[in-house]
Image (tube, rainbow, N blue to C red; front, side, top):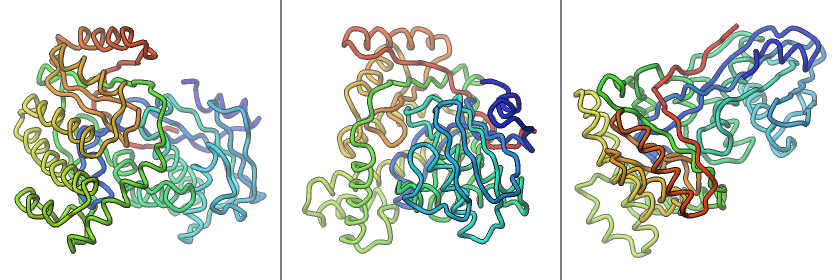
Length: 380
C-alpha cells in the first residue's frame, strides 16, 4: 500500500490531519451466530484499510478511494439512507450514524486505501466504517471508546447500507489484539482476549481466498436471519442462543419446517463449538480445535447451506494434505476458507489447494498465513 499521507496529498492537494487504520478480520469459528445473540471467536488480520482525512470548513464531505475511480461529494447534513451509491455508502453511513447520535461532525476530505482482499468476506465494509468513525471523531472530538465505534459502524451497515449484519465484524476490527482471538458474547457484548499464537505451537493459520463469485449473498443472508428469528419465535425464546445442546432434540421436534430445523441445529451446535474452541485455546491446546473447525464447515455446508463448490474443494484439499481442520469463514456463498495446519505442512497444504482448483478449472486461489494481529488504531 502507498503512504496514505502522500496519496492524500495527490488526491486533494493538501495535507491530511490524520491517518487511521482498521484491519480486516477472519472468524476462526462461530458463523451466523452473532445475530442469534450467540458466540464468536474472530481475529484481526495483518491486512489493513486506511482512512486519511482532513477537516473542511464548508460542511461538505469529499470521498475518494484508490480502489475505485469515482469521487463522492455531498453536504454532510444531506447524507441519508438510500442517497449514496456504491463503495461510498459505507463511509457515508458512518458519518450519518455519528450525526444521528448527536456527534458534531463537520466537513472533511477522506481518502480510503485498502490491502484487505476485496470481495473475500474479510470485512472490508466493517473496516471502512470503523476507520471512518475513528477519523471523524479524531477530527471532531469528542471521540468514543472502541466498543462505541463498533456499535456506530454496525448501525451504518444496518440502517444506512441496508445490510442486516450482527456486531461481530465491527467488534473484531476494533477490539482484537495481537497474538489473541477475541471471545465475543453477541448478547451482552462482553469480550475477552483468548491466547492464540499458532507459531508458538508449531502451527500456521492459513486463509484461502477462493475468489469464487459471491452468489445471492445479500438476499440469502437476510433469508437465513429471518429463518432463525422465526425459529426463536416458534420455540418461545428470545434468540436461538437460548437453546442448549441438551435441549436441541426437543426443540427440533417442536419445529415442523425442515429448513428451519436445519438452521436451528447449526446455530446451537456452532455456539457449543465456539465455547469449546476458546476453552482449548485457553488451555494451550489449539491443535485439538482442528476437528471443531471441520465440524463447523460440515454444519455450514449441510444445515445452513452457505457453502459453494470452490469452498468445499478448498476444505477437502486442505484436509487431504494434512490440515488439522478447515472451514468456510464469513457469511458464505463464496469468500474464504480458514485452515489450521502444522507449520511444516503449510506450504504443501497451499499447493494442494491450488492444484485442486486447477484440476477443476476454478480461478486460482490466493493462500496466505494469518497471524492474529492488532485492531484499529491511529497511525499519524
